[in-house]
Length: 254
Image 1 (cartoon, rainbow, N blue to C red):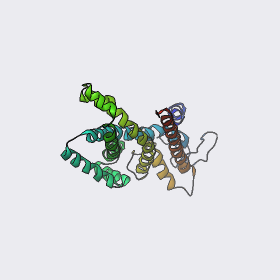
Image 2 (image 1 turned 90 degrees about the vertical axis):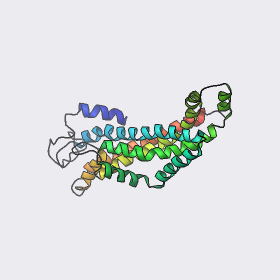
Image 3 (image 1 turned 60 degrees about the vertical axis):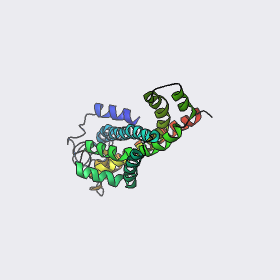
Image 4 (image 1 turned 120 degrees about the vertical axis):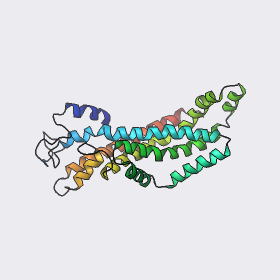
């Protein structure tokens, strides 16, 4: 519903989410449902115009590490090259040893602010967490009877990898990705709150919350409504993740 609202409301709204228009700091009313901000922009339109910025960045910021980390971790789990395992394993452990958000902030400070920098920083940091999970799972999967049977039947290594091993490894990393998505949504908003995300005047929840805190004594609505949208997104993803995990548990063979 949030994605649908983000697609429909800005398109139907008569207000431009990024350009000053009406009177500043109007209370929520029948024309401006969430009021207006300090520049007279309609907060209702801006909140929903930010949906695809925040959720889109989070989706890409989870998908790239999920794919890269799952493949690298799987290859490490089935590899018999001890030197490669040692070197890449040390890199994975070294990345995971740093606090996630601090590492991302440091990378963005080097790369420069903006959504591309956030996505790149998330990808460079987060793949290691997926790789650690995938490597552990791949070691177990690689010893299963169906994998040994595929080797005896003469299947190629590529077919065994992508047909039998990665699908079973990715079930673990997918479960992690669902919970990680919530963390990344909050991280994207937090980075924009710190001025490392989308440049103004682009509507984005973290940036809107930051701008609203500066006038919180005068008007509560420019801060509260983007915050509620962020909470809505997090709770919705949590319910979706719980539903998918319950479904996976029910359909898993006993």
